[in-house]
Amino acid sequence: MTETATNRQLDRICLILDALEFGDATASELARRTGLSTSTAHRLALNLVEYDFLRRESSGDFSLGRRFVRSRLEIVGLSHLTQLRDTTGETAQLWIRRGDSRICVASVDSRHELKATLPVGASLSLPHGSSGRLLAFDAAALSSVETRGWVESVGLRTPGLGSVSAPITQKDHVVASICLAMPLSRCEVSPGEDHGALVARTAERISQAFADQR
Image 1 (cartoon, rainbow, N blue to C red):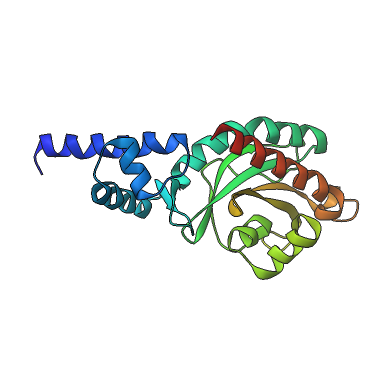
Image 2: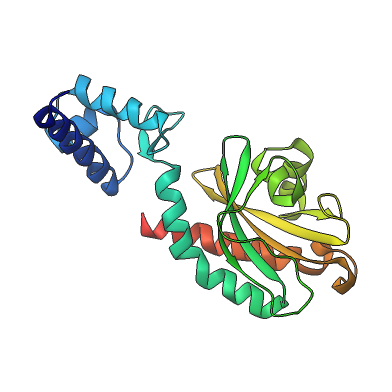
């Protein structure tokens, strides 16, 4: 592909991405917004889905994908994570799914000397941990979220540590999870019983704030 052809392709991709800043769209609507032919808009959109720049909804509409979800969630979620950490004293994290793993995209560590912590960028295999079970769409985890709003893990991934997680959703899709992690020695009952309601409310606030930015 020549440099001119490459630049033209990049220009078209940028048109597609910019068009979706105004909301989800079908291929024909993308064509209208960008001035591209419907076949070209559809082909480019499908290519971008393969690389997680776009997502194909069940309705057939295209929306911005996980690569954009990650950067926006970092911006939206950080203040909420900080408030959650300050209220509970425990480490608050934000996780997204990437293939068969989950990636930590934001973390605010506990100020306690003894704490549960992982660096931003850490990757853990699914479905271990409360966020891992949630992002792997584990049936028992989803049932717990439906009935209580949260799912917990008590020493399952790391002995002596526990966590409670709740989903961040967009249009009924789980796009990420918020996790509060702690040593079990500081729990009065369990991670979920102690902090689950607050974690669920925080996840709802992040979901709403993320939706408001779109």
